Length: 246
Image 1 (cartoon, rainbow, N blue to C red):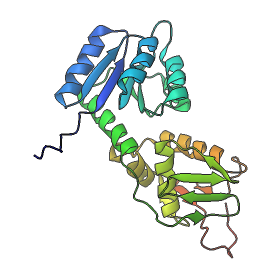
Image 2 (cartoon, rainbow, N blue to C red; image 1 turned 30 degrees about the vertical axis):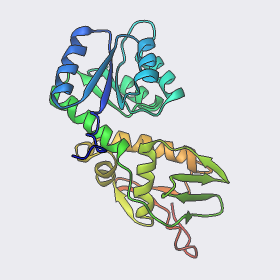
Image 3 (spheres, rainbow, N blue to C red; image 1 turned 90 degrees about the vertical axis):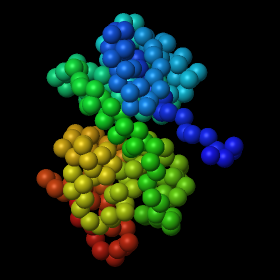
């Protein structure tokens, strides 16, 4: 190894929970897989660690005193796009949906196995850190929407629109297959990972996010079209002369 090269630092995970025994359990298993673990026992300490330690991912418990997990997540999203996995009580579907709507990237239901936790952490990091292969040309969809995947820029009516990493990756796979229906399981596998191919609620939620940001009328989409029971299709902008059907 040359003097100028150095090994990459391990991925840093911030674990936020008010139960020391659970933090210890998570630490042991993540460190066994080569992660660096930092701890916070409250939402306020988590925000301080986010600023000072710059974690690559946060595991955030929902049920905490003072600032709960949802309130902490809202404050995190005001300052950072760091991936967040919520730790929720088993069977609490409303908590899972609320977390995703507030900007969480995934959730794990308690109790969970070490293998499931480590797998979810790795999957979220792959999804948020691996860039999509670029489409080199700037894409002019129509007079109001243009996309430059090389520069990671999306303009709607001349204004730059910010997409989160998962939204960007989903849009890439839709546009790459413009005019063709991409099945639900294929989108889930490509964007979230093979182990997520049955999690269709993720796909519905993120399709809605994209429509809210890109469509002139999200309830009557022009660009991202639903093929019921099959998947989604991005409008074929390369065939201007053909009327599109939604």
